[in-house]
Image 1 (cartoon, rainbow, N blue to C red):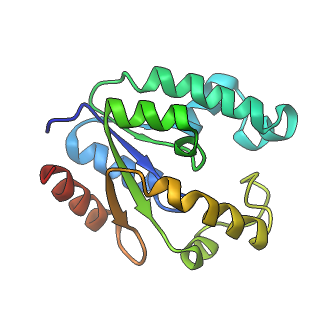
Image 2 (image 1 turned 90 degrees about the vertical axis):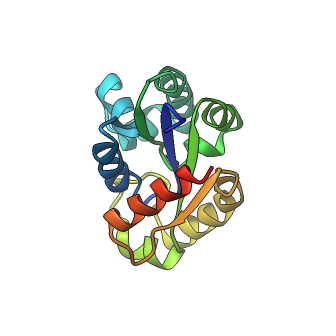
Length: 167
């Protein structure tokens, strides 16, 4: 494989964590969930960071953590849903690895993600749909696009690996 790292991008509920951990295992690489890394280093859940410190502070922490993680060798990194939306993060991801957009329909997201307050930007269907529609054009800038609708993680991983080998 020509790349040292693979960045998974996409909306919440796309399967980044599940597919990412399986992809990393298949490659024998390390799997890193960026939101989990932020929670670990800040000793606070993402929703609490949003509630106590605000989204701008979270995005700052996200950018800082991402800069560090983008130098990891042999890593599959699942970005938070908003990370690739940031132009600086997108530039780093595009220049230091291969970006893979895990595409998922909004209908499937609604079935996969519970609106229970654990996801700060997924409080109600209208807000979620608006956010989804705003982010789709930016996710589409990723180099590889793979649909996750109605598919098992192993089939998604197979397609990711095939598509990357074709680059």
